Length: 403
Image 1 (cartoon, one colour):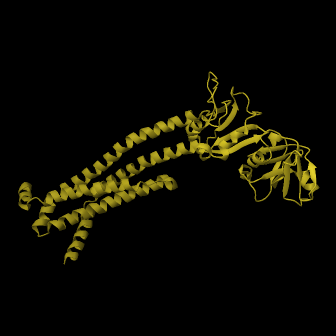
Image 2 (spheres, rainbow, N blue to C red):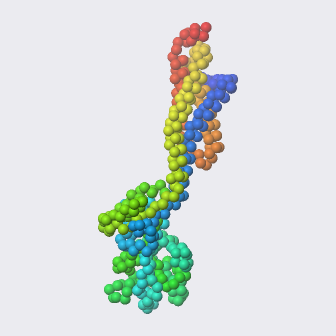
Image 3 (spheres, one colour):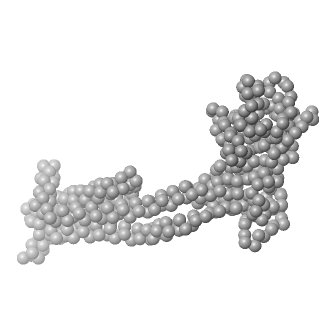
């Protein structure tokens, strides 16, 4: 019997919606607009934040280590201990940087040997580096062999790039070469994997870490030192780390007469040019701040409006509910009918609002579900409060008030 009553009341609710179509459409539109406004303001913050992230990630900031006067970027004659900043990931610097380009000075007086056991004088020099040079730097082309990429040169494993004609002379039979500094017996040969070739003179380019640890004997300095930031928003974090080892550039050109964290005198400066980055990001950051200030007020206003609309639309039906009560319909059933009716109108409006929202923003749409849920709860709370307020009033009082 109870189920039949509920079904009857549901049909009655649908009939009532259709009978009062203009009012129903107004309530649906109200729910749709309020839902859409909540979605749009949240999406605006997401979109602006993503735009800011895109600017930060796409804007390339190259940090260069120079002499203390910010003049020389090459031939720095830096102590090889500075490479520890990278190899030991001091202060977690490698979490913020990429495209690390460190190379040594040219170092001569090396011999090499393939598996034929014949020791040969290297006519050129050996250079340690962490990157694959472009053609402009050494005026000749570099090529890596299959299965290798540029990261191998930043690895601790001994690897090198040899002259192409050296490989041709050996008939491309060998994939390792042994190198040693000077011919002194105490200097042992170190085996390097051949990972690439170049078209230039008889120089061998080795991965910097293995070159510095195995071949230099502390005799070769860093020629140049630079890297890019993974994301330009990390300028503050990287600058903070670099201040432990390098001088921060300033107009007065201050010189620090003290030891850095590597126990070496401060002799080099880091230059981190940001260009017009601030001019690009400041307007976006300003917009985000304004949206974040406005968003809570608009959200509360939308929720409050939904509550008031649902409350008032139900409150005006006192006479109708009184008649239902006088015909024997229980308070719970009156509540059920009114609640069901508003539920249909609210859900229809919300779904339409969400549909319009996704139609506008398509794949970029980000729906903040909890805000929609809060709006729904508050909207239906307005209905519940209004119906309970009416249902608890004595039927005769309502009838007399209408007379």
